[in-house]
Length: 366
Picture: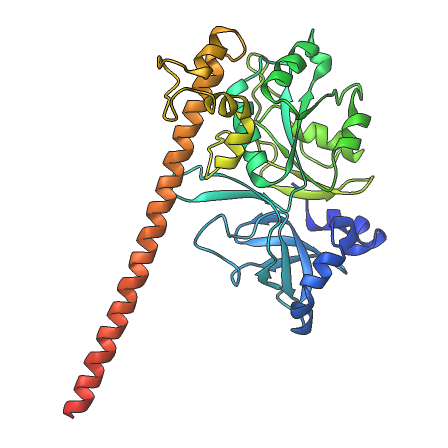
């Protein structure tokens, strides 16, 4: 794990917050906060109800009690820009509006989502070619990335451990048309120059444990900053060596957010992301004879015709249906929670009014 001190040399020598993405647009949006005596900060790590932030004068450890939220999606996360009250006990007082945020369904399977990283420009989806591709997982990662507003880039790692990485590239080119796919090897340096050029702004590394995220991150940083660990030879799975999301500046500009391996990649209100990932099936569905076609045995089904012609795989249609059902379930759970919150709020208002009228009646009698 990185300590706050790990960020001091970079922040002092490279112009403070500008190395972390601060620009004139953010400065203009911060005018009222500056007038209130607050200073801008970017969250570079969150744990135990507090966070590490970078400011114009260097790193600080700050409290988050004033910006805590009942909904984890709105809670402070790595990548957020914030207004900070400095002093003996620094405290975040407000979060600036996010331009993008990667959200997954909560690991607890509650009706809440979980924000993984905010204000992301590029989502690097890290996939090891040392083991067989898990296409369903890659589709999930793509949906998260597209839904967030960030630009996805698929990064194939451990090319030196694969007999034929080009096969994986060809398979993913069909799976994710229009998404840049870069094959790399941190051990040999293959593809790293091309990858460096493709990763712009704030970059987040997403993928399962053992995919090589932290090793790749160290290669991009040019130094062994991020903790790494071995993987099991039989299935390529690794242990969680990264225990929290953490941000570090890249030597050629921009910042990198390393994340713990994602065991669960549940979708949360990701309609747009799914439409982007399965644009081929969405396009075919619009050509079906019936608008409510279930793509099973209905006459005039363009999707089944494409499957019969070998243009779309049965696996891909199954994945599309599964993720649609999962996303609809998560959305309905969220809607039900919001309705319950609104109902609780109305009941609280009613109780307050009832108590007020009772008090007035008692005052009138006396």
